[in-house]
Length: 90
Image (cartoon, rainbow, N blue to C red; front, side, top):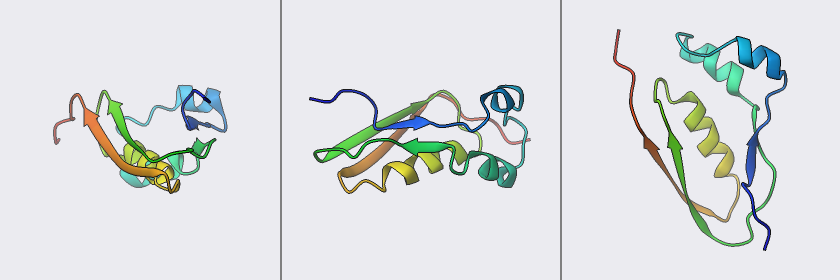
């Protein structure tokens, strides 16, 4: 059985990503930054449900993009998200 996650975070420029955090950035700019940065590497061989766990929910941009990428696989039935905390409105 092949182990491992079926996707990865394929950041084009790791140094730029490390020095350009997306906190306090507009949702549109976050969407532009994260688009095509999450890459699905494998097709799943059987139907699965997936639980994504995140520490912080601000705009949902990263989670939404991750779910969209995962749902391209016909064997992904449901994707559930558990978030530990949400940022407050300013």
